[in-house]
Length: 173
Image 1: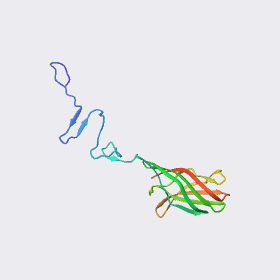
Image 2: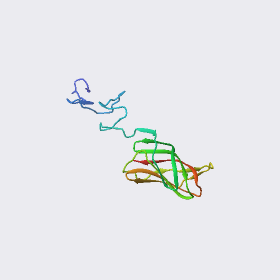
Image 3: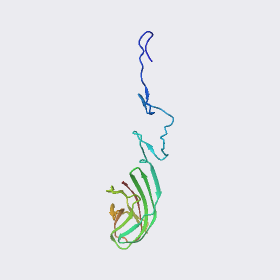
Image 4: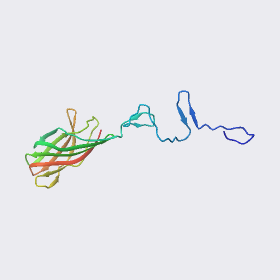
């Protein structure tokens, strides 16, 4: 209550608790912790009271299937890994292959997460031949074949032989 002696008392409502237990506050609430009944440590509490795992970060090494599409043989993964934060996936790759002839070549490999919403990937692709010199590996593209999402590396060089393709790229799910 507030007011002066002899005057009418004025009440200020700063909190209301209903019979169901729902509380409404007229200002901010500060607490040392807030626990959602049934929530887990991998969930985020949203403003409307729902929970989500979007925004969490995961990363792992994975072994994609590679496809020697044009002028490549005997490709093998040296190392591929991804990091996913929410709907953004970043892939780091290092793939060994044998380029059979000079000119245009293409190698594809599966993405760690597939989605019908993927329209493009953005990143870098380098090629290192057995001479130890790295050259840009042309363009990095996205493709979908029979429902499988893939990265496509296009390589335009006059060289052939053993090559290591490496780089990174990101895409949205």
